[in-house]
Image (cartoon, rainbow, N blue to C red):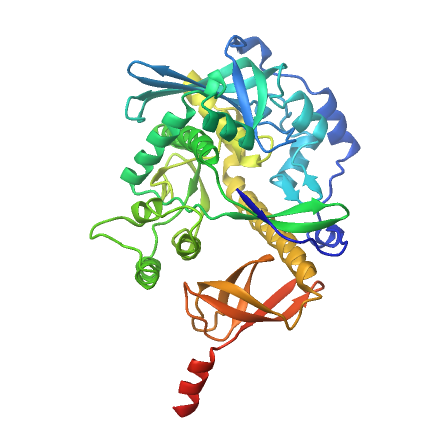
Length: 479
């Protein structure tokens, strides 16, 4: 479900690309390697091209990291998850290896991506495109009838996707009762895994995402709610990452994605917000359980989920070789977790996957992968920070451009966060779709009238002022 609003006058994102030093071009050497590199592990692969894998990605995506097949058994499920085997294609110490370490990940802007790897590789020879035989790291995960994993393994294989699907199409197929046979059990699997997450105490924040989309020669903001298929498909990746983390922890070497437990202050603030919004919080219920029970698309849900982001602060990476790190869990997932499912788009996945492959095969971890582990947390922290800033800058620029001719106008807004100390309040407008700062002290969780005071495309700044109701102004003047 998407809500769309009017576009702005023409503008582009060149200044953001320049500001964050994003360049699509690769060196001549790196591009040549991406074009000519072959599968160094071809002789050790098992042929699994008989499995009818499918990919599920946004429309038009070409950098396809993952392909899935789910089989339902009398006793549970078997999930097969094929991941592009980038570690067998990128030569360690090469020019391409060096440039990917500098980039860290693929950056996505409204007018196109800035890829981690040259497109000839990420959207061509290594991508799990339909009807193409590709090298992959193939995960096989067995689950019982409650959706809990009971056995898992990963090995090098040759695979073949039979269809490139997108989220909207898959959702429509499930709604019509005609899902693709390869993922007919995705809904059952996803629901069981979501229940498992609540039992673990995981925190799933399902905020609709702001997206900038093209409208002719300009742009607009869309608010895209997450569908059931988005959630179900995410559970496949989360499950795989949890199994990978278990493999590395048991072996005492690897790279984890970590998140410390939510602070007591953040939990208290969320409980206060729930009380203000008349959301029931039963005694003993976890934050994850309360959030999972909220109605979708309701304004109070948006306000509650926005406040809940405060529970998920401090995400990091932990490399280890011998001694386990002090923190091995990701509190949002409520389990140890590792990134291994997006190596075409995220640097760390190539190395973590290689570690898992070696551990499961009972062979030495390649030196190029093991030696890189200590450097990866800092590389990924920097890359993640840059990606987050780029995303925000693109949205901020679009919001300012949409509103720049409307300074002084009044709008109806939902107060997502009230003002606190030096932090301004945050409000959400449905028409046009904007999330912005608001001066004054608007009441959290309520719909109020605000006036647009700032919409500057140069600073990418949008700000509103709370229109205090006449009754409140009168009371204040008496006091």
